[in-house]
Image 1 (tube, helix red, strand yellow):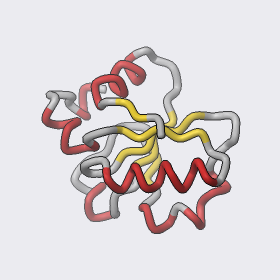
Image 2 (image 1 turned 180 degrees about the horizontal axis):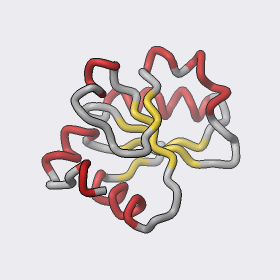
Image 3 (image 1 turned 60 degrees about the horizontal axis):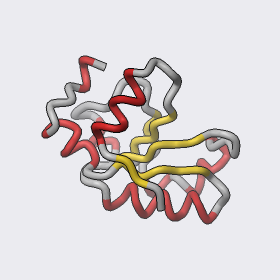
Length: 103
């Protein structure tokens, strides 16, 4: 499974190239804040939303701490989707001083 850090994800976002970020946290969790432009698909809804994912794109999967996103990446890879786990998740995104609003 391919993984990146939240710092690497922020660099990709700041490069001004489109980045496909999928936040797999619950609606309650995402109500506290998401990365601008991220698609929110709760983990339990991923199987019903496989048609969202394009085989020619790479998707960066994020959750609260990195556990759920790792499970989703494994599932997506088994279904032919190029997915990358964001280690540390949104918890680390804030801890690293990566202000969601500054992106």
